[in-house]
Image (cartoon, rainbow, N blue to C red):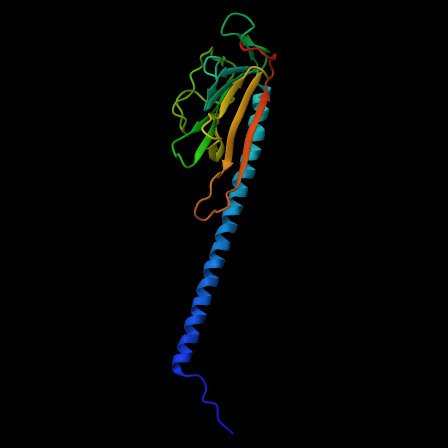
Length: 224
């Protein structure tokens, strides 16, 4: 009977090399899957958080009675200024509260373009007994940052600055806000997430926001 001589040194080296290539390939695939999973969780968290913030913003716009900016002359912008509990049709300009027993609110949403790859949307609010709605054209905060100039004091407790959404992208080249007196309100046009593939995210995830929001004012009323 012939006795087996086993593997030669060269055969052993070739086998180990082939196994190493396989293991490296498996490691690369696992790393890509893990990165994709983490990116998916991160994107889902960002989107979910931004959707919740959008719902709050939409409700606040619905409750507003004045769209101070954008104006009829400048109907599109990356900023919006709204007023709650105010009417320019009451009393002399700039107007008067709808209910004197309730504080007036001036609220601004604006797009922070500091990081072009990660646009953010901020909310500024000034609410109190001495607050009045700005007469058009309103003067939005420029630039839109985490530390805006002006008074943003919500009910005297100094928390009138907050972030609404990040990882925001424009819908094409359109400004985010469009004044629409046909619905008595404003249209929002932007995307949360990525619209184009990139390294580590070949299938981009995003949520489209392209809605019209009617406010508490008469349709076709371009004054308030």
